[in-house]
Each structure stands twice: as structure tokens, then as C-alpha cells.
Length: 100
Image 1 (cartoon, rainbow, N blue to C red):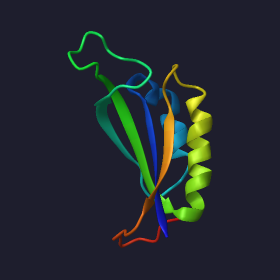
Image 2 (cartoon, rainbow, N blue to C red):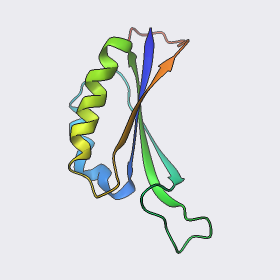
Image 3 (cartoon, rainbow, N blue to C red):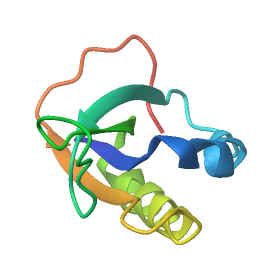
Image 4 (spheres, rainbow, N blue to C red):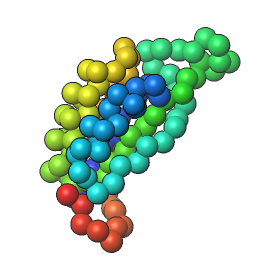
């Protein structure tokens, strides 16, 4: 059974946590630029959207909680309104390497 751990954060906060995310020593981390809004709404954008980052990790269901808690601790270092963390179930994962 696999899970995906997702963290959404302020684009300016990634520099604060990049080394710590790498210290997890997990087989793969994806970081994508996304747009959206939450607590903060960009009033200079017609739709209120602001630049954010999405960090995704596919892992075993057993490791997902540990990684999510690690991300949650990192969120305390971020600007206000940053660091939303979720665990999503993955019903199927095709991969040629064993995930931790």
C-alpha cells in the first residue's frame, strides 16, 4: 500500500526548508510551482491567486505519517498561512524501485 504526502507552501519559504527536505533521504521528491489561494489572497491578481510550491513524496503507507509529521514541523518555520500538509492514498503505483 502506498501514499502520497503533499505539502503546499509559500514560494518564498522553500529556501528555508530545502536542505531539511533533502535530509529525509527518500528516493524521490517532486517540487512544482502552483497557483492558488488560502489564508492569503493576492488582491493584485484578478482571481486572487498567488504563487506557491507543492512538494510531493510517494512512499509506503507506513512511512507517510512520519514524513507528514516532519513536513508539519517544517511548517512552523514558514511564513504565516504556509505549510498545508496532507496524506493521500495511492491505489496503484507503477515504479521500478522499491519505495521506503
